[in-house]
Length: 170
Image (cartoon, rainbow, N blue to C red):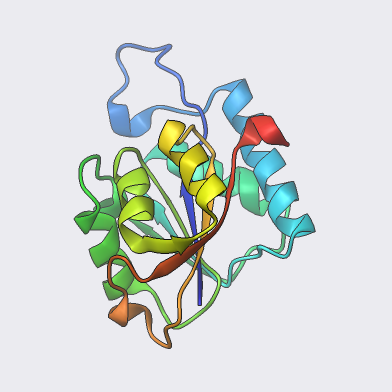
């Protein structure tokens, strides 16, 4: 099974009156989300299910990505992915809400999404892991494969890092 872990695209702090949950993407963020969607479509990384944070910037990232590829019918927006520390919250969301579809895409926030990517991978593309260790920028995507039949069985350390794609590399 394949997991696609994306950090939301670049968001703005332009309006100090906005709650964090309501912050929108910047122009750069919208362009990056669309570019990542085009990359995903061109490289066969088309999700069959998407789990997305309920934050405005995550939902706008979802819209930008899926505007460039065939969006799955199975999209879940959840407050439970609006988490910023540790890998446990997104891991539990996957175990609880993911159907046995692959690829599964998760759009969430840092540092949780970065922590999850590191915790899940025990092998694979060391260059991609090193790049990810330098920085997990906005709109970046980690591609991780698992020898699983059910997302509820997902555990740390059992994934194989396939690739790490940053918008600036496109």
